[in-house]
Length: 171
Figure 1 (cartoon, rainbow, N blue to C red):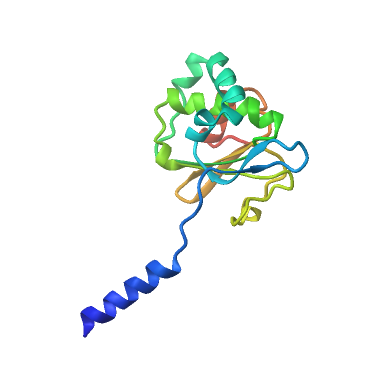
Figure 2: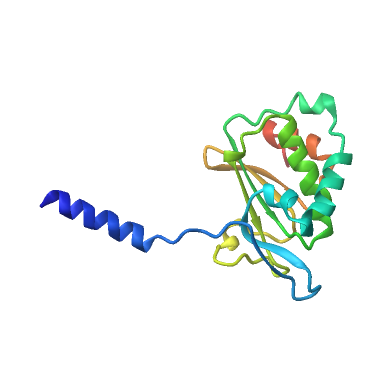
């Protein structure tokens, strides 16, 4: 009897849970061009030509500051990125940011990326929790506490801003 009850509970949980759609491409109403919406991965930015044309160029041409890269310690840090593939700042800063993460061997299991529309909404996801006013927004967390953000464009450079956030001296 107990085994059946557990089985029914598990079937109920599986039946009620809905899988999150990842890398959902829709059409930007303003431009008529493809855009990502909702939860996404960095792989789609290379795999789909709608995004790879700007992503690869910026990623390949960006040279992170070597001395700063050595100072970036992302151990036990989680990062949330809220971005818009329609946004010029995202097209510039996101590839650069991801290149830095690659160079510091950041574990992408600790990265969550959300693509939003021009109203800063993501289908089926409550983005309001993050209080996003501009994109891209890079949010750093450690032990479930926000350490800081880089919003739209860095103050100094992505690397310098990351070091400042991680050192706890962000103002």
